[in-house]
Amino acid sequence: MSAPAAILVVDDEPDLLDNICLPLEVEGYRVFTAPDGLAALRVLESQPVDLILADIAMPNLNGYQLYEKIRENPAWVTIPFIFLSARSLDTDIHYGKELGADDYLTKPIRGRDLIAVVRGKLKRAQQLAQSMAQLQRGEPPPEKAEPIIQIGPLQIDVQQHRVKVENQEIKLSAREFLLLEHLGRDPGRVVPPNELVKSSHEYETDPVEAGNLVRPMMVTLRRKLGLKSGTIGSIENVRGVGYRLVTPD
Image 1 (cartoon, rainbow, N blue to C red):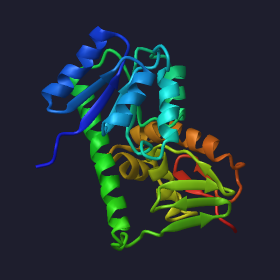
Image 2 (cartoon, rainbow, N blue to C red):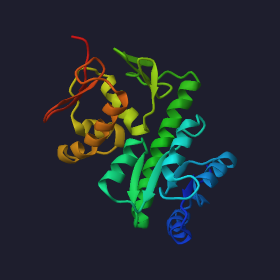
Image 3 (cartoon, helix red, strand yellow):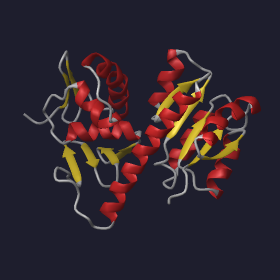
């Protein structure tokens, strides 16, 4: 029987920290805590962690800075990272997601809602880890997989989960990578939002909700890729239909 997942909760307010940890512990997760980003890094250096929940406004090293430090370390880059903050303005939420975090939740949050998000992130991380392990063992990839997808200056390394533009590596969140990979597997085809959501979120929904979920992620992806609209490898929005990767004529 596998050990329960370990979750690191980072928050400088003890009462809020207890409120977050309690439903996680009741669910059976192993929970580590830290009062700020520096303490969180020390936990990560000494303990294996499967998911991170972090506040933003903290002393010594805030949540944004912690996220950047974690994503710079190859040993931690695949750990799902969720912001959990009282900052609920759209600008704060958009900024947090644009950094590449796996999710941005606002306080207060109900215990059952928190558990649902945590379960989903852990499940997806486990699936990605299994896929990587299969590749490392030399097992053949899925039927449609290609080790490298190259579209003009855009390179998608499916096995290593890395993206480069003109040989410069681009940092993407797990969901952003899945969206781009899905588009890259059939470049030039217009992919509807609900198909993209099913691929990246493992979630089936109607076109309206799917469009609302995908739209901000596409904005972030375009900004990170830095490719001029209409150039080979850029993401094109076909209004009312979906998105596609631009290919050579």
